Image 1: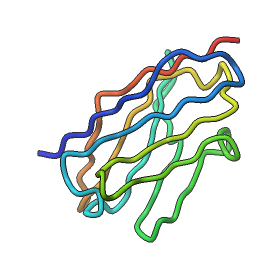
Image 2: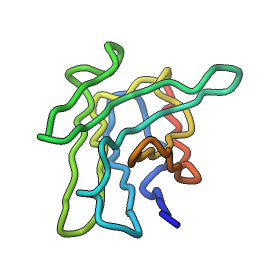
Image 3: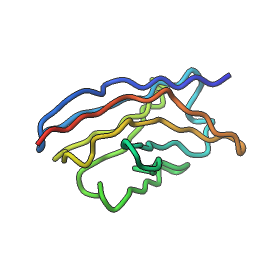
Image 4: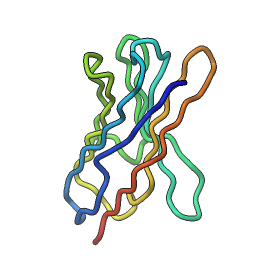
Length: 115
């Protein structure tokens, strides 16, 4: 059973930065795609950034130019570097991985951005 464990969330003021991590129990090279989602109170979960085979990356328009998704295959870990944070970035951030049509999720890490 694949386990994904997020870490690195916390509280920061607007304009600040955070890096969150997602450690996988299995080789992340076996996943077809990995990504970060977030869910704010009262809102639906939304895709923030994804990274595909071949290192192709995509981002939600709301985070383009501010967030960077990356992965370290040797450490089986995916990252999300978040810069120029805004209060509207406040949410629980979830790690997601897909392999052969099966979705795997982490437990989430809270990010709070104060104005």
